[in-house]
Amino acid sequence: MAASTKISSIFRPNLFKGKVAIVTGGGTGIGQAITQELLFLGCKVMIASRNMERLSESAESMKLQIKPNSAAQLEHMQCNIRKEEQVKDLISTTVKKFGKLDFLVNNGGGQFPSPAADIRLKGWNAVIETNLTGTFLCCREAYNQWMKENGGVIINIIADMWRGFPSMSHTGAARAGVDNLTKTMAIEWADKGVRVNAVAPGSSIYSDTAAANYGSPDVFDASIPYSPAKRLGRVEEVSASVLFLLSPAASFISGETVKVDAGSSLYANMWTIPDHKKSIPYTWATDDTGDNDDGSSSSSSTKSKL
Ligand code: ADE
Image (cartoon, rainbow, N blue to C red; front, top):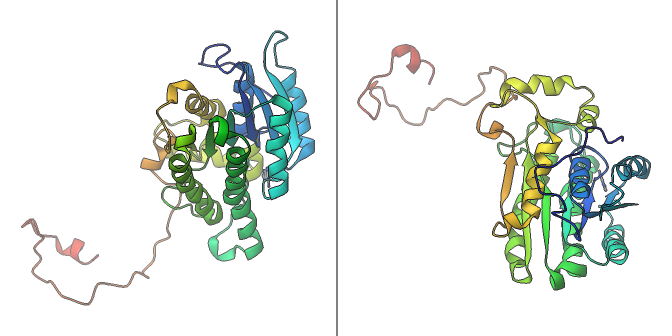
């Protein structure tokens, strides 16, 4: 995955000089944007993914962007976050290679669109294991192997699942689980100097990887009227929030989830429910006065729709 846009940052140069980060799924989409911005600001980054070919290609492309005099370094390794031993290895290898671990960004994940009724157990389990269990394993190992003794910051990337997630029930359930896990870990690990937060990108954050997953960029175009911003979001806009939460500017923020969705989750929803007459009518008491509680009257046409 070639690194595209010219890299830049709103944050000051060298903000993360001397810091070490792991970004899972750091070779594509939002993860790649986070990795590029961390590198731009002098961080040493280990990116990890299940798909080694795509990861290597992306890593080579991002390495070319590192300025010769920069403290930044990039390493990559294969890791299936569903496999406990591989997660243990990811953390220990990173600590061995870079000598420490300041930041963990849990961005790696995956899902496939399907109505809940059609999801087989194998597919359900795969999505829960990747997005919920995989995130848990990465957090637990980063904490036990390094952050318990040395402090650190963890960011979990979740999703816009606040009103349920029609056609993505598995990932909605998993991401809601990670939202709660974030709060629990923020409290349990506070006394060790570990902050844990989440970032929830809206569904209108465009990336080539996401477009390829959906099979078409048209899904993104169709989402524009549903966004209060009336435009698509950029992966760089998610990255900026992640880096803010990693930075000392967020030193008093933990257990929080930042939505990066331009307010979409408060506004319209692309999901439509077909017209139907399946809602069981209210029949177990009668009130035919026509009066509302506030003393006004409902019209008979309105009443016929009750
Ligand atoms: N990205 C998607 N699925 C993954 C997995 N199981 N491990 C690491 N990165 C992933």
